Length: 127
Length: 234
Image 1 (cartoon, rainbow over the protein chains, first blue to last red):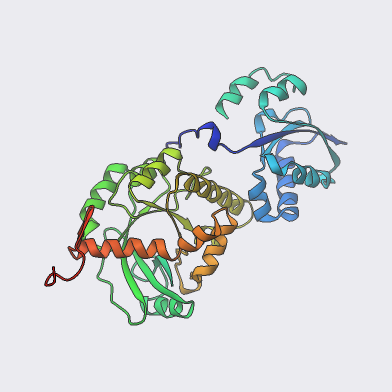
Image 2 (image 1 turned 90 degrees about the vertical axis):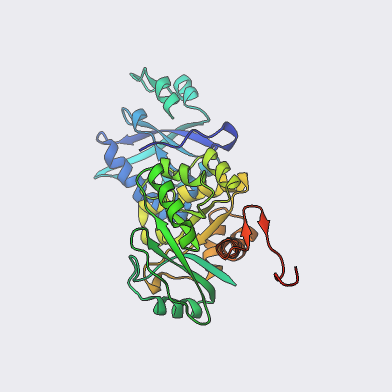
């Protein structure tokens, strides 16, 4: 199935990348985190709020309890708020700590490098 | 004065007969509904007093060429041509074809919104309207509904940018899926369409589409030309 063409820069959605770290007793699987994040987000922001926030967890960048959430530029505070409400992921007690917010994937690499990911830039081009 | 240009009855995939749908539509204050039928099985649609019944044909094609062929064949046999969107190539071909009236649910069955700025620009030039499909929102839930809302929001943003016409429809498959025009407009407004435009998308825009098609069918108008007044008086 063919894909739509990429939009010109002025029409693209404005987005922010939130870099976070999960502090927990045991290591957390990516799938568990996605499930608990979506359930909490739907409860807290609602279906409409979630659609507005355009939240997307970037799978390629999830490694060693650190990850990146992409969201709409004016919904950063809402995403921060619901991430702070996470208590249990899967069956493990845990806390999500936000390391920072950036505007591009390149600056994540510069500031909060997730180690072992050398092909970050090729991923950024696909985005 | 509200119109709903995408309704299914027992003639296609719907549950209720046209009479039942018309009765419900009258109660909801709609002044016209378009009964959609899928292409190969197209039957004559009865007229009903008190409500405007429009005969519409839905083209479900797997390739752009097939869609174009069917559109040429059916243009003179029905009052409204809809295209079943979803595949990007079909979406784009529909936007670039002046015979088509409405491109329905371009985001159906996709993760993205199904159209880009090129499609929307072409749709504006060829007078193709993009549909906001209410049933897709109604029948999805939780995570899937979030994706559908996001895709429709994106379509609305693009259409607002390029001044492309949008039409809000209920796409009902039973009489319980119908909604009154103002409520459909409220959903469209919530998703980013300006309030004035969202009300036009269920009233004036559908009416203009139907009126211009009827003039063309009756031989009173062609591309760019229209006969005004009675023939006797000149």
